[in-house]
Image (cartoon, rainbow, N blue to C red; front, top):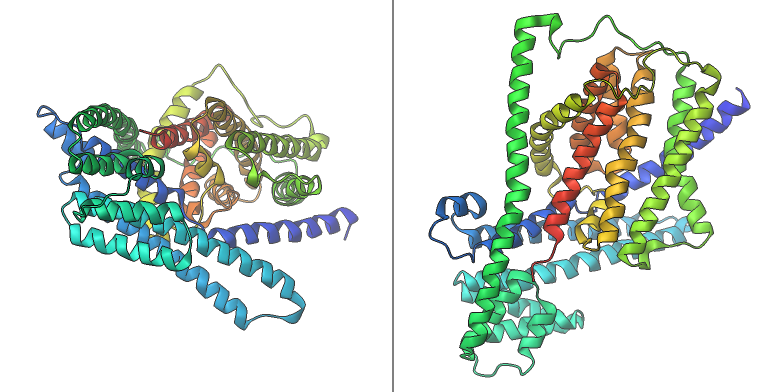
Length: 511
C-alpha cells in the first residue's frame, strides 16, 4: 500500500464519519417544507379577507372553499409532527441513559444537552402553534375549543415559567373571546408586539369590536384589504408559475415518451450506445477528488479551521450569517476545484468532451427543457417523500435562512451563492467530473444514477435524498445528451432560483 493510498483511506474514514453524523443528525430535524406550508397557510388566511364578488372562482382556486378549516388542519398537523419529533428526542435521551459507557460520559452529556435543547426548541414552537391555533378556532366559531387550547397553554406556561410573552398573549386572547368584561390595559400593545400578520389582524379586530372603536376597526379592515391583495399576488406567484411550468414539463415528457415509442433508438430518451467518455484515470483519482476535494474539505477541514479561529456563526445577525455562508461556500468550491485540477493535471490535454462550456449551441433549450421536465417529476417524488418522512429528515440550512431573509443584501448574497456559485461548482464536480469518470466502469445510464445518488447524499439531509436524486437524474440526462456543462448549470441555477423565489415570497412579512 502506498503512502498516498494510506492517507486516502484515513481521510475517507474521517470524512464518512462526519457525513454519517450529519445525516443521522438530520433525522431529528424538521424539513423546511413543513414550515413552508405554514407560511403559505398564513398567506391563505390573509387572502381570505379579500372582499370581492367578482373573484369567486379565482378565490376558490387560490384559497379553497373553507380556508379557516384548511388552516386549522394545517396547524394541527404541524403540531402533531412537532410532538412526534419531541417524542423521538425523548426516546433518544432514554436510550442514551441505558447505553452509557463510562469512558464516553462527557460526550454523552453533551449529546443529552443537545437533545434537551432540541426538545425545548420544539416545545416552544408547539406553544406558538397553540396560540395561533386558538385564534383560528375562535374565528371559525369554535369558541369552546379555542378557550380549551388557550387555557391549557396558560397552565403549562405558568407551571414552567417560560415564554412570558406567549403566556400574556394567550390570557388576553382568552379574555377577548370569552366575553370577559375586564380587558388588560396593554392588550393592544401586547397583541401588536407578539402577533403578526392575519393573527394580529383577527385579535385587533375582536378587541376593537368589544371596545366599539369603529374608526380604528374601519382603518384596520382597510389595511387588511391591502394585505389580502398582496397575499393573493404572492399565492399566484408561488402557485400559478410552478403549475404552468409543471404543465409544460408534463407535455414535454409525453412528447419524449411518444417519440421513444415511435422512433426507438433515434429518440431523445434512447440510450446513446455509440458514445462513451474516454476516461484516462482510474477509480483512485475519482475517489481522491470526491473525498479530498468535496467531503473532507466541506465536512472536516473548513469547520475545523473556522473553529480553530474561534469563528461561530450561531450568534451572528442574518446578514453576517449570509456572508459566512458565502465565504464558506467559496472556500469549499475554490479548494474543491484546486483538488480537481491537481488530481487530473498530469492527464492534460484531456480527451474530447471533457468539461465543455460551449456558448454556441442549444444549451439554453436543454437547460429550460430540463427544468420544466424536472418540475413535475420532483414534485411527485417530494409528495411521496413527505409521506415517508412526515416533516422530519432535515433540510439544507440555507433554506431556513432564506425563509427569514428580507434584507436586500442578504437576498443578493443568497442568490449569488445558491443560483450562481453552487450550480457552477456542483455541476463541475458531479456532472463534469464524476459522471463521465464513472463511465469507465458503468454504462452512461448507470453513471447518471450513481452520480445523482452521490449528489443527493452530499446535501446531508435524509429527507432530501429522493427529490435531489430525481433532480440529479434530470441534470445527468441533460448533460450526457448536450455534452455541455452550461446546460446543466443553467438547469441547476433555474431550480435553485425558483426555490429561493418561493422562499423569499413566502417569508416576506405582511404586516
